Length: 71
Image (cartoon, rainbow, N blue to C red; front, top):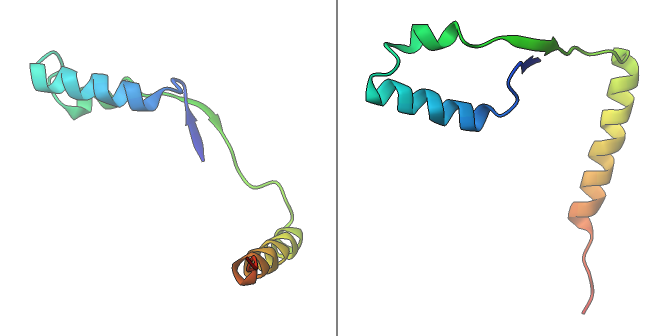
């Protein structure tokens, strides 16, 4: 997963779009040059441990779905 240098990507996207619509920016290719990666994230957990934790999470979700509050 990539984290962009500018974290406010929603506002940046709106600004890029406005720049394209008004002619301030020529095209999308010009905008691509503006984008930069700040940090790259990747999995650090062992696959077996991840699977174990995910199975526990799925079990919890299953119990929550079956939970009913009596009135």
